[in-house]
Image: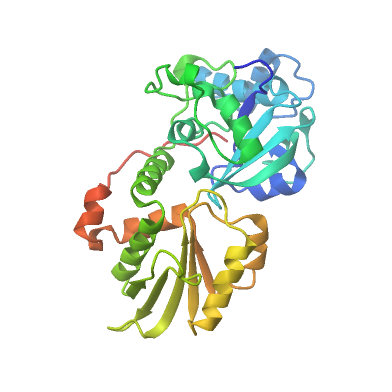
Length: 357
């Protein structure tokens, strides 16, 4: 890690992201490990391990070491000024903040909301599409708490915090062997206790990366139209410029004139779209006499745009990258042969790995 670059820590918000909103609202990171007592007086890693053993008396040594490593990182190794990254499963975006205080054990009635560090959340809407594949793989570990360091991860996340974009590894580090498994370790956890990777999330990120390589810009509009045709709509893709805020017209019936009639706007940029795009789509919805509108925002929406759409649930639907991938997958066998050739997918069954607390 370069001198002056803060350390970066992945701190999850629960198996299903259930603590994310609470963490953002209360300016904290952490939680989980509900069985483990207050760590305030546990001044050494061995003392933390003792609390873990007391909480899990029948646990194997590897599990105790794993949990103790994560909690010791939360208790001591994370320092004020370090960067915290929190993936949010509910929105598909990533929150990034800076640690502003030491370990705290809260008295929250929910035991999943007690082991925390105070954090100032600085970005809460970074799309996964703004982060390159190798770093996304690092963020795909099942551990609740671990350091992000491989592949120049600390410097790159600092750049994401500043600019919203991952520039990739710096040249000197890019020459290193990046093909090796890039699963971060949790504190002092032994090598044989290294965490599994969220295979589903990793596979989805690979699909996302490949899809945008083939369908960036105007071509993404044709993919969206193909998906809507597979779902029973007749579609017309407008010209690449001068479209008046509508990229695709879609409707039922042989000519696409029957309800529901949709106006569709497609934004392939990795940045979250703002209020201006939403307002333009609202205008197109009215001026074209459409029943509903679909906004395909590859990078999602920023906070102001989300607030503007709160009362538009039955008028405007938003698809981010994950939603579009879902639509592609559920219609895959009905998509044109050329699309399936460019985006070859195969359904497989994998064993579900258990998440850390």
